[in-house]
Image 1 (cartoon, rainbow, N blue to C red):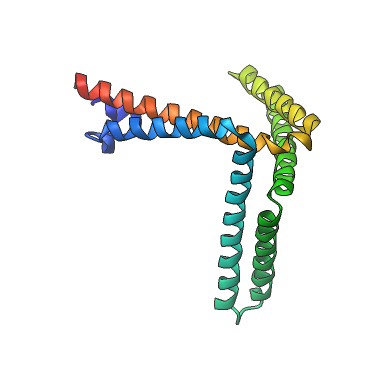
Image 2: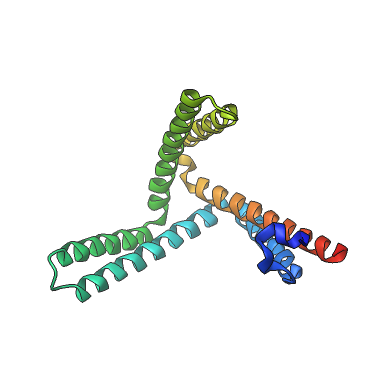
Length: 186
């Protein structure tokens, strides 16, 4: 089995490693650009969510029209309208939306951290310490974000976006380099 097979399976044999390297570099650069102005990246994130919510609302309204003969069609229609109004609200005030998203992020991190810590402490199986550390790290991140809210709402989502782009970019870049190395050796 070639080394490429261990990365994504045998379907990747002969895949153009250069495409992975180029994509990785582009994603890293986008992450760097996003980190240069976190407020712009935060607003862009809010607009992205707004677009997804608007599309979801339009699809639900269209679905309600198609199934209007059934009882729950009214509920589909109302749910779609709620999504449409939420999407419009995001576009009308993306910074307020970013504040809401940041607060939700803080609460989600806290709850997931508490659950992971509880699981680790209750199970204490192999690797439980890593699960506990992960839970405590999430709780710490939640506290840092929550204590800085609402002031930090203008940059937190942009920071998360830029970090995600850079990590994804480095991962894809290193996969491409591993594929190149396997191609050269194989």
